[in-house]
Image 1 (tube, rainbow, N blue to C red):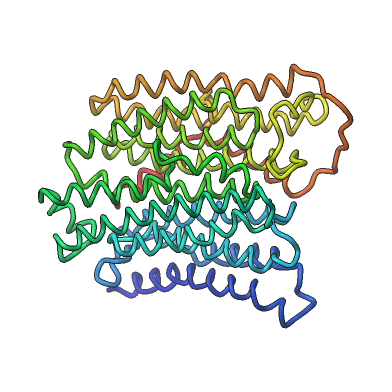
Image 2: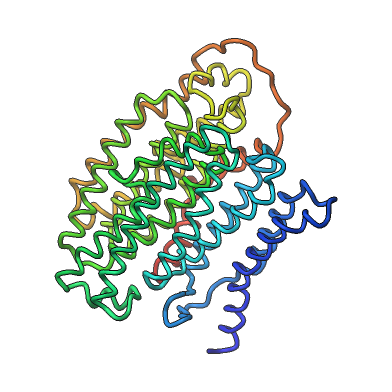
Length: 469
């Protein structure tokens, strides 16, 4: 290994180590220094900014550690930068409106950091054992974060998420056990060479089912509506943007092990059923967070469509993830600003927002139109790149289904906009002065606009990263 590679490895591997240290500082330091109590959010944000400094551009080479269990490449750096960006946004929203009781602030940021470390390990995983351990490190803190307020809706969300997540984890570990009995090495490279074994299909299907739970593909989506609705809104945004991304990357690795066959047929049906079911179920949702939950499921289906585009499809996935994250975190941030109850605002409660808070309504409209795929917003180009790759690979029928369901989604996305601008406000509304959450909303609204109008820079970064898959 050359000195440049050693330097790069030292800097990049310092990022998760720094986050581990920050997690324990947020948890323990205020216990000993009373003046630091209540400052955990600022400590967490400062730690993320420090971690970004250690993130270096990757050399044109893939580095393997621990016998292939951990891989560092331009793809890893791209995804780690995405994870840190999501973490920073969630922390900013938590600074504006606390997601946990004051006595639980330390535990909140500790769990949040642990979940992001698990996500980063999942992005860098080179074998199934590492991927499973990273998945659990990501999942267990999120179970606790969903119920950290200890309210009835939060505990219900955490319970349902935990029970179904445990079922998914059980399926994953069973699949890994089957594959480990067949192959001595469980690196993705070794598995690609050994997928022809007859019993391997059963093992792969179990593993795929487990990760489909995290990605929220139908019929593995049952936990999503209740978990998103009952969890603190900041954590709902984190689940929609970050947890889904981890599942998508591992599913892509599993999908790419096969050249057609029954696994690709199963993914075809998963993508089609997810796109159809999620959009139809979203049509009648009265709550904003619940609508965004089904929107998240639908976008998992669109991402699965991109799998069929080959290398170009993976470029589309890497472009899609940050674009979708900006829109969905922004929409949840608007819900956070407007919520009065534990389950977030009803869509009807947004009536008159266009007159009362025009900038906030404009930002929400940008998020809705981006999620719907209206040009020239970033969501349009994300869907265009995702679908065009699949069309070029000959999967026109699947793309037609996705486009039709995307058209159906216009109804419920436009419903939010219509309520904001065309229905009068009911009752009295107290307006708060703009704060950190509003600043995050406007930043993300600008992001979905600029990432669409000027899509080439982000797409170029995604294309460079995708070459190292």
